[in-house]
Image (tube, rainbow, N blue to C red; front, side, top):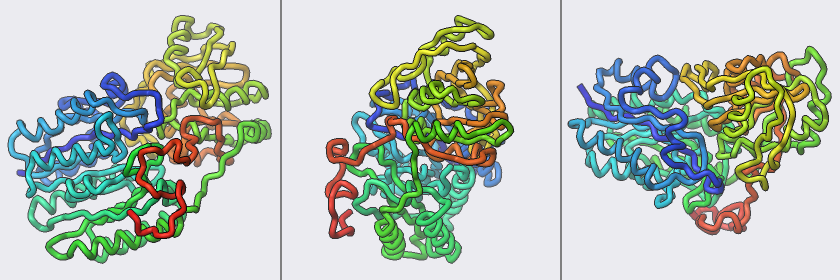
Amino acid sequence: MHRVLTARFMHETNTFSRVRTDMALIRRRDFHLENEIPAAFRGTRSALGATFEAADKYGWSLVHPVSANPNPSGIVLDDAFEEICGMIIGAAEIKGPIDGALLHLHGAMVTDSYEDAEGELLARLRQTLGPQIPIVATLDLHANVTRKMADSANALIAFRTYPHVDMYERAWQGAELLNRAMRGEIRPFTVIARRPMLHGFDWGRHQSSPMSELLSRADAIEQRGEALAISICAGFALANIHDVGPSVTVTIDQMRSDRASGQSIAEDFMDHAWATRDFTSVHTLSVAEAVARARQGKPGDKPLVVADYTDNPGGGGYGDATAFLKGLVEADIERVAFHAICDAEAVQAGMRAGVGTRAILTLGGKIDPRVGGGPLTLEGEIVCLTNGRFIAYGPMGGGVERNYGPSMVFRVGGIDIVVITNNGQANDLGQFTSLGIDPTRYTTVAVKSMQHFRAAFESIARDVILVDTGGLCQVRYTPKLFTKVRRPIWPLDPIADPSIR
């Protein structure tokens, strides 16, 4: 019986955020310790759910010290990183011999001391386990993958979809590869290619080229046995770090292929990334334009889904931008469901007032009023209060519990405003229905998200538009902001030779 170490430690770090990520913030949402993990994830379509299924199938004995998945936010404090990292490395040291490791990481975590936190974690694990024990890590499609990550792990398996609806499948892919490696059938080795780019691959949208074309090519190469896995990562550009940007990693079997063949595949894919670097499918509207579109809705219409692209909690946005809500209120737009304003203080005020009461509350704009609009004082009715917990069953939910902390619905005119304590983007209908809101009954549904909302909300929409509220995720690509990145780099610099890494 193989003993396999597994853990989840995922954080997408927006280095421009004012919200520092400490242990208190990590523990607030989606945090489980060893004995809690099986009950939380067995039977779910999550990465850890797949890992437990693989353990049952292959007869593994799992060691699972921690699962930590805080919402994207600012730089992770060293103390918090060391605590979680210590749980993972400590389990490898004291839980007996480990035959392999399957970790679920993000790939864009930044701490006070480490710009490449995942590379540091994987390097420590490699030092602990030794050179012969296979290590496989799944990554988010928006990982800023480094050579240190590739050198420290045998295989890196990135999500292939955006919205990320294939976390379960990618974990299974990693588990199958790890099992073969532990049985001695393969010897995985990973190479990486990059280009001097801050972002690429249309930010990872798989619905069209360049991602769709490259994913098809990757499938064909894997099926022909020329590579064990090909991972295409768009990078996470909301990070002022040296190694920001897209990458391609190729995992080969050293028993049958050489490093050069894998590197050739990776470089060819990144050549395509460079050639298509200017392509974008993103088109945002101003607040005034989005309000005008909402005004066109008629009773009985399917909802217009409006996504606040620049206050995306999934990219480290504060989730408290008020600019679009202010526009809707001032225009007296009716039949609107709005998710959400993240404001623990306002929720507490609503709880003190109680359900069914009218109150004057000040919502949002409190973390940094300079981005997305300042605090908005409104009079309305408190129509629902909950603890913010529910099971998400949508395409990205997988049957896993969500916890947004104490939450309320505050009705202002014809607008039902969801106010939450724990930040998070809208990607599951349960974020409305758990609060008594059926989003299909509204003419306009407003959410804060860049792309993940499409997994659940696109199917109920008459149309989808993106609005720019001037939130934190509205990054201007200038040398003044990106002071730590390697140079030259596109789009900050003119580059004649894209072979620069």
